[in-house]
Length: 104
Image 1 (tube, rainbow, N blue to C red):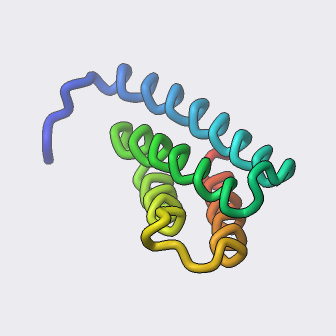
Image 2 (image 1 turned 90 degrees about the vertical axis):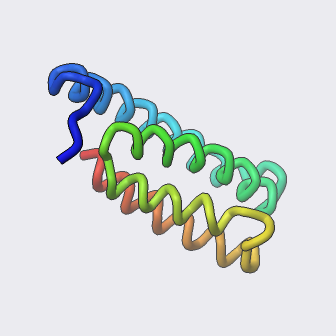
């Protein structure tokens, strides 16, 4: 097993901070869905950036389930990989629900 740079106490504190940040990101993405600013395409573009941030925070702090979900969301919102915007938005809603279960 790899030795962490951080003590267990420090890593636990970082995880708490990351989970707060992730909850804020989830809320921001849900607000984008609610207002529909820029249509589905605009929501996907904003979500792409935010899921990238979420994946990084989760990955660094060992929140592997959230990191995997956020990485999937980042990949499907990439303009190069995106299916139809409506299909993408529907999958993003599912991913957000799954992420929320890991935050509880």
